[in-house]
Image (cartoon, rainbow, N blue to C red; front, top):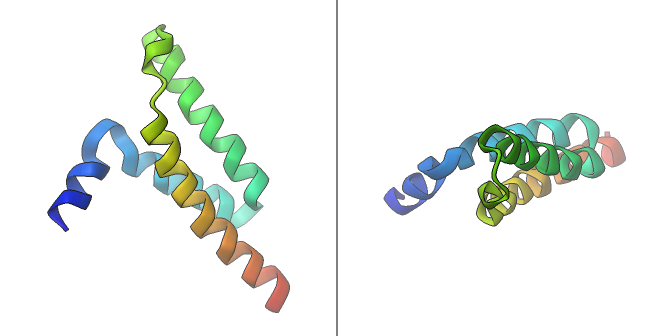
Length: 79
């Protein structure tokens, strides 16, 4: 559990996961993928360096997108 907390606390990964989860939950998969790209683009623009692109943040966003998108799909298909 401690490893998971440490992984989430590095480079605001928990923020990426949470934001993409909420977007995917309400708007679906495509909006979640767009949110991932926008969050990473924001990080790059903030530092003004392309090296700020973090693929692990993208993976955290994908986890949030999968969870939020799946719940969104279940609600729309079965409710």
